[in-house]
Image: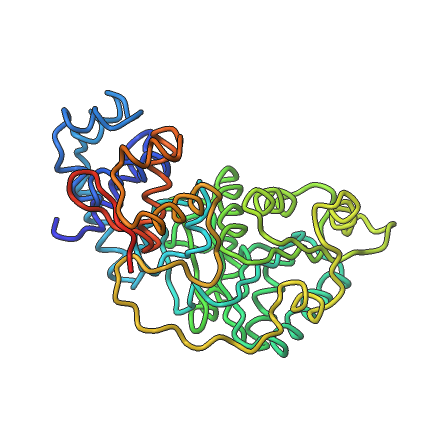
Length: 375
């Protein structure tokens, strides 16, 4: 078991260890391997972890099965993106429930300058199809290279992926199952075509079936990975509206294309606009203006030299992170005791805030529970 990926996979298999506890463990131990090498007596002292979780980590026994999964991932060139990986989607990293591990096959840049999620009904009208394709065509003209995200489902998702390919935009499908299969099967050839310039992304391990309860989790990734979420056609109920709720939580900009008031397939979009949850969108030019994407593209970023790079293109900091970073700019170096005294954050919130700032390259850890502002 030489590869760190084995230990990263294992963290996702321990019962009760989700994104929050994983961040606490990484904050304490630095890497997944060290978590499993720690004695149970040390693990039990991690705030909030508890004896049951500590025992399950210390006595984890299924590494051999994970070695087989690692072999499959290597064989099919599937990349594992752990939350400390610099290639992990940085916008998604800012979400409190970001998956600790993602699986990606393809060539798209998951930290592209402009990322747009386009979603909608699985049974679109001709109006929905035409509107979606025209929107993507115009995006390609106004903002070449924008990454189009959708869920590889029937309907608007498939229309969006196909239009992106047609107009030479990279496109990534976010799946609700493992990368050892494609669902629906009818989209297998589409998925293969997307791999050339885009890709397939999932938080689910291989052998995970496309069960219904996986798709709300998939929708959170669709919302969190993007700058903007666009609903081009939706009924009054459905997965698109759940994705919008996630996008609202993550403070993404959300747009909906209106339809006729008598058209049931536009009822969801019209309701979202009426309730003020989304902006009414009419064309790609408006999208560019609302997203402030009319400026010339930024100069290419310098070559990364740090394992934990600075945040990529405005994913934003939380209020806690912003205030703590300002404190570091004033003091440069702080002890954990000083930070507690000056921020008044509870231990759990503070641990997560410090870890996020470290992952984004703003601060570094020193011996003796000291922290220093990075240059």
